[in-house]
Length: 509
Ligand code: PHE
Image 1 (cartoon, rainbow, N blue to C red):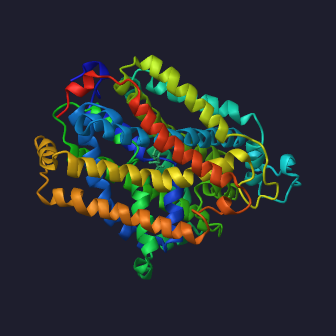
Image 2: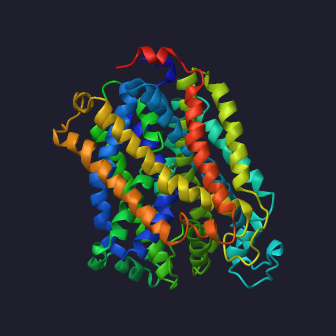
């Protein structure tokens, strides 16, 4: 084992880091929005099934994949499958890198909103860059569009990058220290928000809606697809994250138990976030919409602004919570691709960080580009936000599933799945039976393939490959699709051809 790579100091540190990665912006705003869209409480059922069928098994696999190979994703792929699989590994990491770049831009905006909670966020303002007079949009919306159409935001983006770099500078040691601080704080803030939400007059009604299931939705394939793809996203699977975090686990770890702990903590947080958000919005008859960004930047702040007292304080709390949840996720993404560089090319950590972070900062600044391209706000408004939306469509909608599929093909078909299962069982209290082989070989790939096909069908209905911008107003959509495709598939392949760390090859098998 390469002891220089570092190991988690304690099981708690690892669980906090992995659950910190899983609990992110998605848990706080995206899940409640989805649940609302798909008929309130009934959504919990397909969601729970998705967690059991795909979430926990895949997390067990990712932890053990990392632990078995003592490597981050592309090197782990190479050790078990050889050069071709290393290329597929790098494709996944390039995809994760793109997500990382825009995730950090969004976090920069969260910091901007946080600054606003001290005053400007609560007042009406004109949005000059868009030519929108004061009072037309809600206060939070005008504040947000003022913010993103201004270069100042880049400062926030740089700040978030600096914090991420500090958090991974000393590998597991510094990650562990920061999650020990951030993750418990995040839970406390969430609990305070719930108490405020349910004690609002009318807040209980929102919770009732959440727990009044409309079972008829379960007939819709859309709901099932929504549940299964949300599980991928929320557990941070298919990004090399859990492989990298797993690779820092000591030999005698219980992957099954770890995966269950992390998954249940994540989904528990999500459920209670649903209670907070539903009560808060229903108290003021505000309908949660399905987009994550508008939920967190416009809709929830709008609800908070109507609080009978302490709106500023709760606004501050909400954005601090978003920041804490987001930073413990972004740090895992950064660690995923930095550790991929370190392991594959045998680079010292500092050099990998310097190189990786420089590229990352450039990417995040591009997603923050303030140029107004749609003054009517029929679409996203600025160039950066439009790019973000377009890349997100491919990287999250397709990239993750593709990575999951390749990972399953390697582990289920190319590597020896019995060997992997025995490796997991060796230190596990709960032993995985033969059924696990079938799950990995047939059921999981089939589920992922169905999600992929359903997405393609859905996208083909809205024009060439999806988003309105592809065929509509902006040819940008086509350009982004080509850039995403080329950087992931050609870029990933080329990186894997660069001179790697040959010593890794000797460990094969
Ligand atoms: N798991 C995070 C969430 O639920 C999303 C995320 C995925 C963040 C992957 C980083 C990396 O919000």
